[in-house]
Image 1: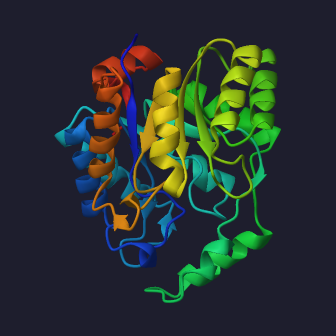
Image 2 (image 1 turned 30 degrees about the vertical axis):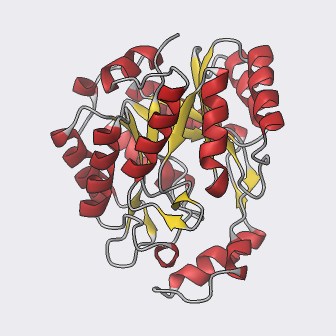
Length: 306
């Protein structure tokens, strides 16, 4: 059995600063958290940027450049840049960092969906920053747009940069979308799939749903590597299921703020260490960044533009 790729999603565009004092906001904090994941055994880090003054998700290329160049300076991690961005960012803002920095790997969401966070307001009453309440509330009437046109265009940009897409799959229809893109020649196999479970608007985080997605991918795509991430309390349960099924796993503070029930994670590194402990009990060993590059067929750290 090949080794397992463990990814840490460091800060994302979902959680807001009021939800946890440990959520990385500034470039210093994001880099420190990424390196904690590296030291714990992660091979890949998934990177978003945030305004260091307010913590709001940002598309600022200078912030991205500072973060990823410093991670590269201190590690050989595979850096996966987001094209999901922050909720409400334009498609041009979302893909700009791929065009500028030509990373080895970048996320690519495989279809449009309702992406809802407004229900979090039922439990969150106090906010550090004025933008947080409105940011969460607007998702009651928000569609995360990833049309066939933008999927085609994004894949063209990725191909120009020799950046491998990490296709984010929130429901089964997105596998059908991807199969169509492959049929048209817009996407080349083998592909890398990230099954994302537990977001309101996408598929529930259940074992049945994970097995259905995996089975559907074998029917529709055939030639692929795959990983799983799950929102909140589902993170470690679904990650363990992925290990049992032979997949890779993503953890990190983007997806879940807790290490266990009632205990906030102090870093993404803590979550990486926990899932690797579980993996080793199941006979699975973590891939190094070099091994992850080989498994995914990446172009190499010497070919990025940062």
